[in-house]
Image (cartoon, rainbow, N blue to C red; front, side, top):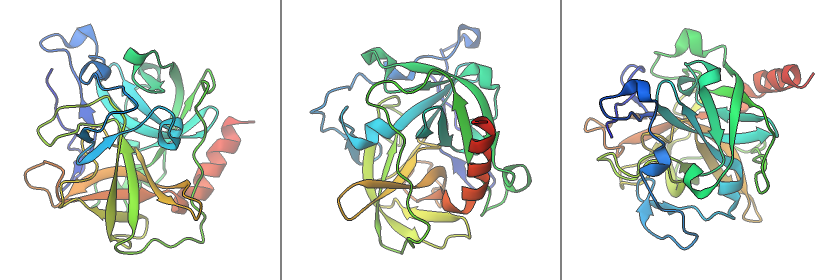
Length: 274
């Protein structure tokens, strides 16, 4: 399997992974679940980048899905917002929605797949996608078929919460587990610290210098904080890596905050649910 990185963003690397069947692009995308066979609730291998595999019954597994563009061969991650809507990165949905599918876990383990009906990127993306900050890298995905048993929408962080430098946040994604490019297709999670809570008006940067964090294939995936009861509150969407000249995902990662786009998100949800 060969993979190439989506480098459309200037001065940064988007955390999308391209998965192709070697020498035969017309054969379609290789199932990313074939890259990793890990699907054990007791798995403890150090994965995502410096994290661990997610158990099937966890809150993260219930709210996090993979997003595959079969035609382009791209793998991203997304979070469930409603019975038929997920949220992801704008750079993950630049293809034809008819070629995309949502997967509720690795298909090799019998998890269900839903076809994508429509995608909408934030209005800021078309104007600012090449900017170094406030790029608007956020999108909504509408899928058909509803949620399978065990899947549920994520709980969003309240607008009143203010993230702070040094605060611990939890990331999740279906991306590679090593900077060398292996391990895509298995949902993993890791805790990291916020580097700059005010990286920009709409974005936060996270410290990955300890070899922990998001990497290619984790684009669009969630960033959580814990509530007072230990539950997870969704606040961010994986956008890109910065300050990482070796492209091993060990610099900083930039996350789009969901709250600044709340009005736009609510307007699209109302439109789709008329």
